[in-house]
Image (cartoon, rainbow, N blue to C red; front, side, top):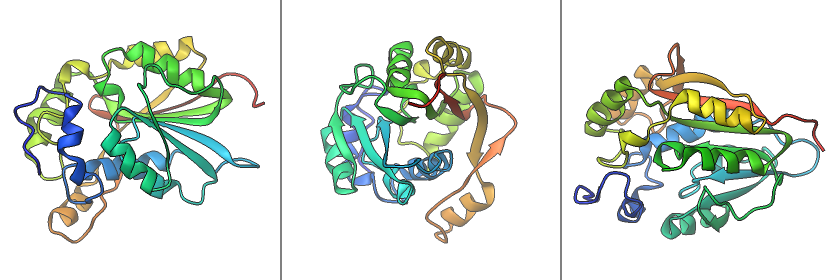
Length: 240
């Protein structure tokens, strides 16, 4: 793995440093593969006709294989050009842009996903407003992120950055972890009522992964959203 220790926490340049790690199921972004699979489980097949799914902070397009056969045109938005190059090679219609100012039309998307991006943005309300703006009435918002709690700081930074399969050291700034009350309030302001559930890696699968016997670790539900959690909600209004 590339050494990113001399960069500041949450420096976007780390994704260029780690460009060769994206699609390695045992590399620095291993857990992003596990989360992408869990995120895709929350996305239903598209309705009649071809649906549009906007993937905010898509990175190298790790969600793409898990959407295959669901009937969506997969549009990914990210700032990192090296990651977007890889996303294109995996069938993603890649758009270089800021997730706080997405260059796409209002109400264009049947589904918006924001996976492991909200804990990286300095203006959470702006990003949530954009995610909701992109949704058609009745459209689905799917997200996963890290809670702004003392427990999450310990688990996701102090511990996880030292474990195989955990995030690369310095990739997160815990000061940007997500306040769940703010998250729900801002989404509700834009017509999306979120339901949250906590998740974690399966201990059994993690042991198999560490032993080299599996490439994928299932994410399983837990009774608390105080560390890692998913959110799902639909934009108010009938489908047009």
